[in-house]
Image (cartoon, rainbow, N blue to C red; front, side):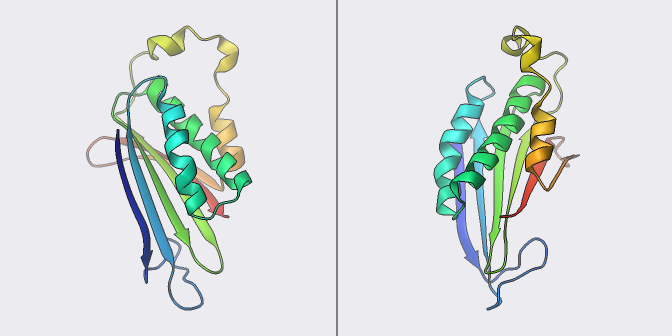
Length: 157
């Protein structure tokens, strides 16, 4: 497992151009390379909970963020090729705070992982609606290296 954390950086501007009353904000980043295996969502939740708490999120906000993370990581290990990398980006200032969750993967597999294929059908298919319900915005993009980035913006927290 590979972890990097960068907290806080003062003096920059938030991704939306907003800044605090004193012209500063704190931008925070956390990256976690996960094993491409069924335990990856649990590992991500375990590693991220204290990070989000240190960023000042409430228990309810942490719960929502962990659910989004769990769904995005589960989708990556179920439907995509390695690597699976979790990226968190936080922007915190006096007026608003934002957290973005990104999970990058190696692109689609031809078939779901064996462990996922044997799960009952009623345990699949709700992840996208859960992520949409808890997020201000969601999306996916492809980076120049061919990795697919699935993201959710928790918006102002």
